[in-house]
Length: 253
Image 1 (cartoon, helix red, strand yellow):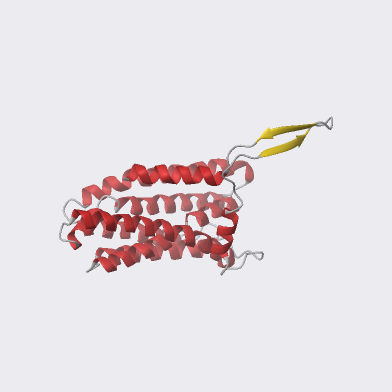
Image 2: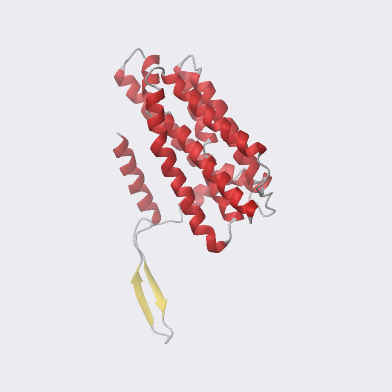
């Protein structure tokens, strides 16, 4: 029981520090891009849009890959590698001499930050079913803490030097890696025998995406008496996700 509680605390701290690191560079990244482009606001806006798109695309494609990898080698090694890679990547971005290096760092950060589904799976593995909802709620609170205080810290640190925010974000991620590496009082979920094929993870994700429908569909249900009743299902999940993503992008403009 204590090991399970320690695992939940570890995932909570992992998500908090990762979200702090991601939110911390949000207010300073546009300022750093401007320094590479001689304060050309128009080109900087284009590059900021590219950075945002690339980060989201890397998470979309590599989240299932990292999830399958965690099924094969275990949850804890994947989370530790992700934290270590994210911390080192922020160092690269802090020392980037050109915008090309900054772009490469953004790609790597999108890949290494794709471990959130693995953290959720870890919670599901080590938490009893009757306590699983509370554990997921705790992880949701970790998201809120990270995204609330991350930009505040980033704005304060980046007032003097925008590169300093990346070093602070690296410190958070590397501290998370050290905590997970040396803490031995929580279980490490091992490989899963029925893990799917590693190379087909992105293809499987796209295939599952096609199963959802945009339009409402009618379903036939049968009551205990044998009479059939028709009901109209809600619109498909894919349409709701597209609308939500569109509104989120518009809100960030």
